[in-house]
Length: 308
Ligand SMILES: NC(=O)c1ccc[n+]([C@@H]2O[C@H](COP(=O)([O-])OP(=O)(O)OC[C@H]3O[C@@H](n4cnc5c(N)ncnc54)[C@H](OP(=O)(O)O)[C@@H]3O)[C@@H](O)[C@H]2O)c1
Image 1 (tube, rainbow, N blue to C red):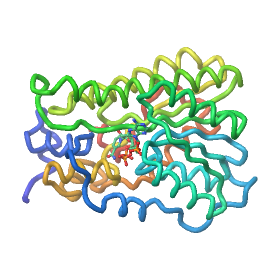
Image 2: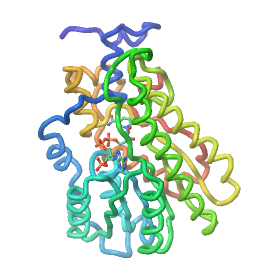
Image 3: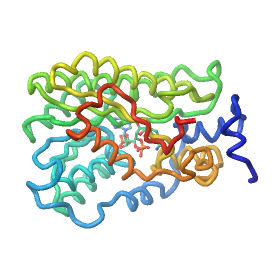
């Protein structure tokens, strides 16, 4: 397909084709998963080399809770924290994948525990937080990453209410509930860091994906509100805004639109799809004391999309 991404980039109004590509990158899914996608993702995010010996590493002794780490960004983040010495409690709904990730991390010398939890269920979230505290004593870092994409591309008046509710329940309400119970624990500890996976879709509007776009704006809002409420209580809250990241979610979206990674990449200044490990490193920076002055932001981790 011939196209001039530079000409498109500077057009004030986006072409329908550009909207499709952006929607793909920002969170639209086909009803069915792309065959083999999970296997590809597993190959991408399996730990390179072994973990560090326990007790060493940048996050040695830290207890990290991650929602939605059976695949994609969450999985890469769980492996990355474990490799740096953290004790990682993570959840998802797919028990088999969760157990496999747990086993791989432990086999490579790290410490991780999978706990099945659905962030749409308050009792599951309460149990997840309790299990992290029971097993690791505290929650130093929480990464609220679980998310789903818009089931179908359509203008707002054609979006089924049930699709809005479904996306909202996971992406917005799920993050709210996760934060609610993590913060309750962190207040007792008088210390903690929360990082929410938002999106470039939290910062700009994307046509045809109202449910996802609204839910990610909500994540940015929850991040700002909590950052203000807890900044003087030893708790730092931030979000990050990935663009197009090579995960099963993006693969499903590309399949749904009949587009390719090469085409999607053209809309980003870096002209490539970001690897989940790169997002994990941004999360680790935000979680670290190096980011002690970073409060209430949604850090652009898109490869420059939000810059212009
Ligand atoms: N990939 C991108 O280009 C991109 C761009 C911007 C933002 N993001 C955001 O990044 C986050 C991770 O997405 P991803 O790209 O890594 O996609 P992914 O591979 O589909 O991962 C999504 C994760 O969320 C979990 N999840 C979904 N619903 C859940 C629920 N109700 N309860 C618990 N866990 C749930 C999934 O696990 P189970 O299925 O096992 O429950 C999975 O581990 C999402 O918030 C997404 O919106 C992604």
